[in-house]
Amino acid sequence: MKLHFSESIQQLKTLATREILKLTQGNDIISFAGGLPAEDFFPDKSIQSAFVKVFEQGKNSLQYGITEGHSLLREEICKRMLLKGIQANLDQIQITTGSQQAIDLITKVFINRGDTILIENPTYLAALQVFQGYGANVIEVSSDDDGMNLNDLTEKIKRYQPKFIYVTPTFANPTGRVWSKERKQGILQICKQFETILIEDDPYGEIQFNKTTDCSSIYSLHTTNDFNPVLYTSTFSKIVAPALRTGWVIGNENIIQQITKAKQTADIHSSMIDQQALYFLLKDFDLDQHILTICSEYKKRKDQMTHLLKEYEIPAKWVEPQGGMFLWLTMEDSTINSAELLKKAVQKGVAFVPGTVFYTGQAEINTMRLNFTYSAFEQMEKGIKRLQHVLS
Ligand code: PMP
Image 1 (tube, helix red, strand yellow):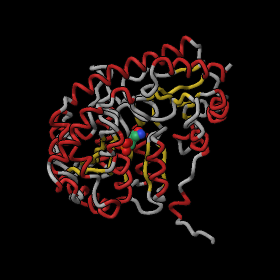
Image 2: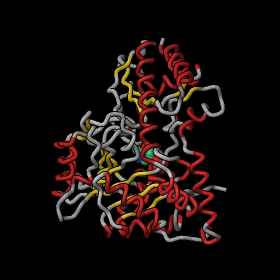
Image 3: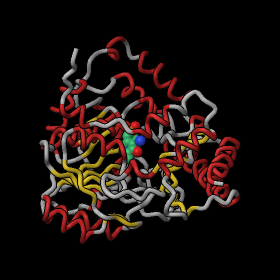
Image 4: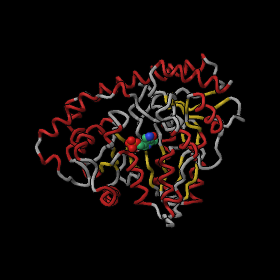
């Protein structure tokens, strides 16, 4: 039978890289490819106790819930957000099935086929795929270590009249970069001036190695009474555990109402058991202390990885990440194609993500993303040694 799939799904390309990375599963391959948190630090016992508490509440805890999300959990998130300078009432927050779903629902709410979205260069691959899946015209704005180039942004807003701009200003995936305060303030002003929505995706903001890094969110820089054009999204995936699939989006009430409508057709609501367990976890467990622990452990792993890259003379440059989970390497030899290199690397038992997948336009082929959080020290050394063999 001939299968007539939708244009949207046909537009979603399976990446050749993904097929290669599939080979890494179950084999003796050390993977720096996935964006995985370290399992060693998952607070499994506390999560288990939180689930026990949910079941102690009686059978009602197994019932359907409201689309907006568990009210008690939303209250707790609002309290946590206040500490980041983000003020929101309960009608301004929607719980989502991971922040990935927030990106999907926002796109569903705003994008008609052919509408333009402006993005950083490079940017988060799975967001790109959502945008392409909805048939958006995705345009890169040139970017450097401080964030988007605001002149290029202004020019592209005028030229394309985008429906929204998507950015990860704090410890970005894949580059690890943090936008300067000036750029954050600048983009907020530009979005207000041109009445353009800004999606601020912030899954890594709390994975901070150095207290002096300014991690203030763009959302929180809006301090006036006019319309705040920022939709802020974050997640428990990196600070608790990704399996709970719980994220949230905060923004203007009218926009949140539309997102709730979109979510109703997607999955009615996110898992109530997971949301209730997270609520009890936030009540009974010292999440802030836990975040301090993972930040300190991840910093050690990041230091170890950069040390090994030097020790094994990997011919590459990078900007030292001050948080997050990724190291973005640019090979000194600009003719190295890291997508080709990956094929050889997998044969030698090590994997990474070639930088090309994070671009929509002209890609820097000699770049790659390495995750430094997942592998413990011994594995990491073995992996970097293998990378050295691939390059020699
Ligand atoms: N945004 C970015 C930039 C990410 O790196 C990720 C996870 N890889 C997500 C969103 C989605 O995370 P989750 O759905 O687990 O919250």
